[in-house]
Amino acid sequence: MTHPRFVTVEGIEGAGKSTCLNVIEECIRRRGLELLVTREPGGTPLGEDLRALLLGHRHDGMADDTELLLMFAARAEHLHARIEPGLAEGRWVLCDRFTDATYAYQGYGRGVDRARIASLETWVQGARRPDLTLLLDVPVEQGLMRAGQRSAPDRFERQHVEFFERVRAGYLELAAAAPARYRVIDASRTIDEVVAQITTTVDTYLDQVAA
Ligand code: Z5A
Image (cartoon, rainbow, N blue to C red):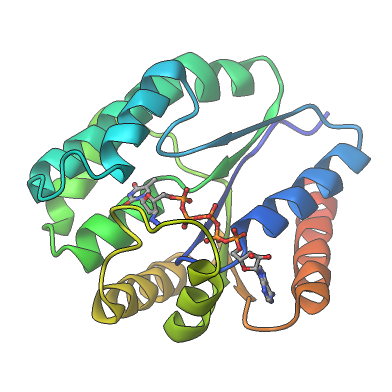
């Protein structure tokens, strides 16, 4: 039997992660595989409390290092309480954002030294890394326009266009550096076209790992 894989989805605001997660979930379940769907920051009661602190406006202006450490605190709990047990029990794990988001937002976006992120990554995760990462790539203005049609902006959504340009460029750099793990999806297309790209990508991956 195929051993369970850890799949993550990444992208800037308004890239369309919600649709993407549903499509991936359907592809995996169609194969009769057990699946745990979760998100970061969050995924556990403690992680969701930390998410509220990170995204809310009560602590506007928190230090970059505080933000970084809270992201990894939520991640440590998530790995301990859900991701590792899920994988150990034979479930695939599908996670809305993971450590690539830390590199993209805290590293490329805020300018936190990437060596610092890498040392926390090793400390908190040991050897655990995603097996497959789908990056939904969309031009910043298009993504922000889509995201702007939603509710009031959170602490990240309030950032300027230049911040998201750095985040997007960072994601593309991360993807180029790890082509075996990443699949870049052109998320600027219509929803139907994006769904088709994701379905083909995930089905191909599932065929590969089943072979
Ligand atoms: N963050 C961080 O800084 N460091 C970390 O380590 C981690 C996270 C883990 C919360 O994440 C924040 O945490 C995030 C990064 C930071 N920054 N922000 N903001 P989140 O994942 O919860 O937040 P989000 O980026 O706002 O994601 P979202 O709302 O779940 O999804 P989305 O990708 O932005 O978009 P969507 O809701 O799926 O779609 C947006 C709209 O566009 C919606 O109306 C869709 O119907 C529409 N849409 C989607 N696709 C299309 C296409 N193809 N055409 C037209 N319209 C479309």
